[in-house]
Image (cartoon, rainbow, N blue to C red; front, top):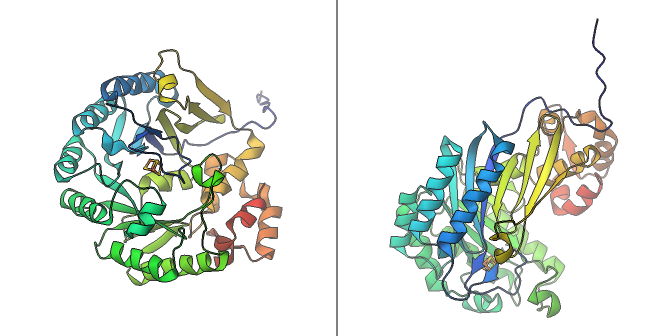
Length: 387
Ligand code: SF4
């Protein structure tokens, strides 16, 4: 007799689990920047590095049943300012991770660093601890812009940090921002040219946006007009393209072979375990996709009984969640990736795809679905199509 299989309405069935990454959040900074809406907290006094790492290990141990038997393709230590932690602490953290979880032999291990908190010896220590990629929050080389952004570092310190990073790492990213208070198109170009002069293999260029719960939200600075900001974006794309960088995601540019694998996994709707104060994660199981979030306040997170909020993503929300990530990719995605990550055939969004195509926001053939140039420019409008 053939058994009758009854599906739960809206249940998910994944043929295989996606790649798994690990995100570790270090929530402290020297000072809170006025535009920052990340979970970052101004440090007061010495950081509880040892206690925090012990807590992170307990966090991983408690998560093991959810990721049993899976290997990590990448680790990203982000913040906040993780470079405030000593190389010894980062070594203890990565040793602990390796003792509890299995890393792919070529796993990408990134650490975020801010100028003003790092020098050559510190970078060497991070390298010896097992970090193989550094992401530096430069934002600008212009002293006026750095002051307007409330950054703790000078242009010279940014340059020194990049040179020091490049003396220990060949895989380095620089974060830059444009459309800053009082910035002209020429100033934005000059910033980028200065960044390119270092020959770093990866640049992330973000337009400054004013986010709720920031100082800039309550006291907005004068920002460049919309058209000027759009011109700056085009100039950024042109300059990086001419210098041989591939524009592969809304804000990300890489030399061939240097795309950030950790972030690509997010954009391809892969899985990630998020540990640390305020960290978020996404984990798939054969019959469901879940999200989890840790307590935001470091003090709360470090309590032994701190709660982890977990929820199952409703099947009907998966197509939008997938698109929210995958449409950031300049080359888009293969239809099979949609099926693999959501457990649904691409035909479930046929009507929406057609509508977006009709508006010139999306292009597709049998191999790939990708945003058009217009779709990238009006990404929010494109995403609305799948809400
Ligand atoms: S250094 Fe980065 S994480 Fe810290 S407050 Fe500034 S923008 Fe936020």
